[in-house]
Image (tube, rainbow, N blue to C red):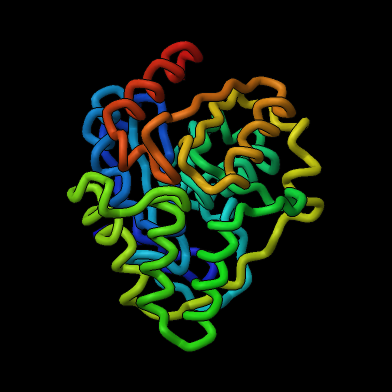
Length: 271
């Protein structure tokens, strides 16, 4: 199994495809690991060099608490693999990492795709009543030390969506959602010491020169839709797309549709 030792961490990563092809780096959500990209990796690897890794605090990656930046880990992996620049595809916190990397290392990023992404420094938004109740439930379980149930409720909030019930969704998708987050539940608490950007990514969006595809699921948490709209409006070279049948993880819930949308965008930008 390949690991990269960098700045107090052993980053677990995987690659697929040939190194002379355009490079894609797939960045996972906080309720998953690099396994969330299994449905797309083989298809993308036919004409891309696909790189994915478990971020600190997730999956098989381990770290010792050394202060670090997530965008620094992305660049360290690119350096390790001898990659000059790549298109970054990030889901949720992975999208936040993609944007951070693009505003700090503009010469290393050819394009950015976000999926229900957060943005460092984005102003507070008002959650819906159902979202507030679910967030309160997660906080209560966390305070009680019930990590497994708190993580389960996080999946129900984010992956299923605050307005949908698991019993109404495809059972295979429901099982896959819990499966993707299980390694993070089993490893217990390991709070990596991630350093935020100063100034924030939100204040630097206009400086992002790479083309961007900003996507979000129609059933995602309301804040994600608000952020997506702002990104499309503010980023100089961006376009948006909504996934009508998904919440926070369209690439898992609608894998073939996500692949189609991604491939079309990559083709239009020769990435």
